[in-house]
Amino acid sequence: MANIFGRRHDDLPDDKISVSDIGTDVLISVLVLAGSALAETESQKQLIVWLAEHDQYIGSGIVGFDLSDMPWDPAHFDEDRMFMVRTVDAASVRTGWDKLSYAPSEPHLRPMLGWFHKAFLRLKREDIVPQARENWFGEMEPDDPALNGFPRCEKHGCFLTYLGCQVCHGRN
Image (cartoon, rainbow, N blue to C red; front, top):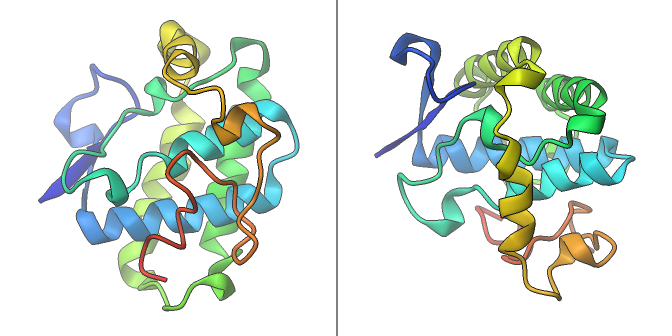
């Protein structure tokens, strides 16, 4: 089964990318590792935690999403969008890959990272779903790591989610 990623809901099918289940797990892992290394602000950490929550751990073929559905903070959109571009770029140069127990297939991963790089650059403030951030926070339990200082996995250094560590429960 494949997961479909888009920039916005109304993008044409040719503007979206289809990624296999295993490819999605690897993609999210390398983005979470790179983003966890780069994130400085609360809103940047929230974006990485949200990504980590949207991996294959929650089920096969159901984790595709549109970038506009991420919990963007409108007050920090421009900075956070460029943070996500830097995160993709850092993943492209293997930031954090040394923490994985496997070597991701660069020939398979490069087109995915390239798509995300371009899609984040093309994303505009008016594309974001305003209620996405509020909805995400509304679904959290009081002990959710995103509400409690953004703890990190001791082994991998990435931000924990209510699911635990993206990398620990993946292929590591």
